[in-house]
Length: 317
Image 1 (tube, rainbow, N blue to C red):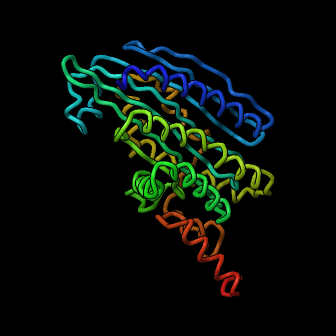
Image 2: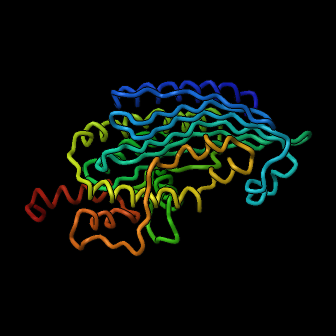
Image 3: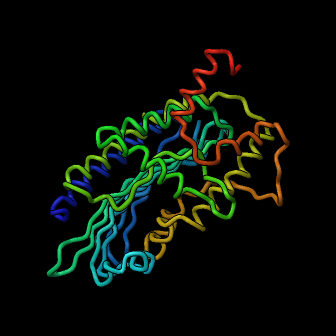
């Protein structure tokens, strides 16, 4: 059944890529996405769209890919041995935005569909996706807005969906070697194939369709904030963490490289500039030190309500 709907999923993802590029280019105001189509020798290909040196985004990319073949890479079969010997299709859209202004958060998202088949056996299929936010100078108002939109996208699918996918995001985007989250989280889900195909597909669409609503208001609020060279240096330092996660922990990067995907497109998510500094410690009490308060799992929506009550009563200034 799922394979019959592969074209429907692919059509949606291509349209999503169009809408994301249009919305982000309008928000940037100074640059457009340039398209680069590619083919995979073993089967499939994609279209990569990248923006550089824009009015807001130093680098941004929105990639569509559809790869298929007769054999899955080791990164897939090691985790799921039942996929051994199956042909597969993997289709998805992934995006990442690296703004120049340190006060505008970096953000990433993707939605994807996977199906593996073997003659005489039912297909194995699932949806996955999500989005996350990586601020360097976080503002609680932005974080709360981000999670409110994420929760609204999940609410039609069950009262517990946001909590589960929010927790999954916190766990997935975690740098174990640094003992910190990559940012303030969002949503992450994988292996979604419970119930009807149509319901799972609707969940994927809800996540993909809500990204611009979650991200663009934050961009508008922060894009004109003044920034100093110190803040720019700190942004580049924190971008190093982004690189570390993608190269050390991210399963999508590993799958893409091992499945023979296009390296330039897979590594599109990397920031254009980043830096590392040995044993760096921010000045105690500084805005840079404050970031650490945001780099662990928190109930952003519950805390915001409690904080609002405290402010009303004068407990918080």
